Length: 285
Length: 260
Image (cartoon, rainbow over all chains, first blue to last red):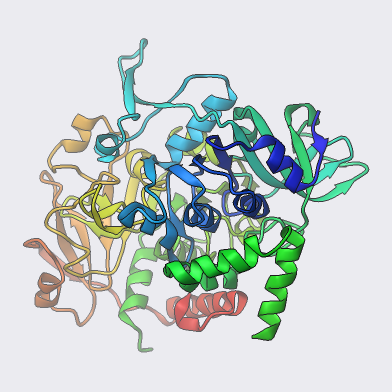
């Protein structure tokens, strides 16, 4: 059964130094607040897994929480580069970052395999691509029935997955909708799972066949309204496109980035205080 | 005749390549713009699939990210990302993969990973995303990008997504199910693979563009087909649909019109 906890307590209890951590959400429902809390608590040596690293991993990498990144597309969507990711890869700042690079189809299949309790995923992929030359974990397997050679990639089985969702009930059952990405697979592939939600209600009123994660498959549920910002929660918040643009100059430079982390993450107690500071700063402009 | 920009010509020329009954796997940016222009003009029934999960998306404004809520709200259905790649792409249901690129070579191979050495990159690009498997499994592929000697290169530093490999029957030898790239649409011209060699050659120049311009903007010794057509100029209907789409997008995302 999932415990209903504060995000501080959930991260403290379930995220350990050295863990393999997946903070998933495909553009939609990105668990930003949880990323902030991991930085605030100074977690170290994490292996970060995520199809699209986005701002959330730019922050974790720049803040020195990550040892390794497993990913398949690393950009600031619609804006440009993730400068902290690039600085870590190109100049080892603030520390060297090992990268393990895949394609989307590969990682999506690897999460499915992880949730299925399988050691690897099989897919038709990578023929003619150079990615297997730089990622030795991309191997091949021959179909025992047809002889076709297919790609084999290790499943993703995080120590801890964190996702954001729209609703939970008081027992900790979670309902999410809209663009689901690999949220369900990432949650079920992990040993432990934290879900931050927009609201906690008496009854989910979930339509039949809706995407519901039962409380007994989760570790903790935390009420964090707006916790996906600048990503969005369908039906609750809009994507903050301006923040994605504003992030570019902040992250471009080590000093402005560090000042931002100190003021907005280390300088705030939790996500609601972060939101208040961000709102005050944007009003002052 | 309305005046138009070279970028508008590129988008219109790309949009015209989509057939009305096509099922199209759409990349973000230029492919998404061209595919939606097609849907709003010559191909109203085209089915647009985005890798985040929307199938049959009919956005009224262009998405900034591959997972904008507008795509989900206007889709026939929204499925998990794993399903998009497993059932719909690998399952063989995509007619056209519509891709952008940072760099291409003469065989339509695409680099979106690095410029320079992989381990000591000069420029680190975003990476693969969905493109390698779209390039492999879609029944055909269209590529759209602006043409310059930096983007159309003699040799790619990294092949992220395969086109026609080393040319000839490369794709067949690699066992790839799809036919690979059938067109590269740029702001100057349209290139198509030559029969046999599968090397991309210029088959149409956009109005007013010279062969010298194309040669200067290509990093390999580009060849021209025996019969080089001139692309039809954008019609008023096409231009109005494109400009309205860009204006709606700019208003929705709070941008200047040119940014969309």
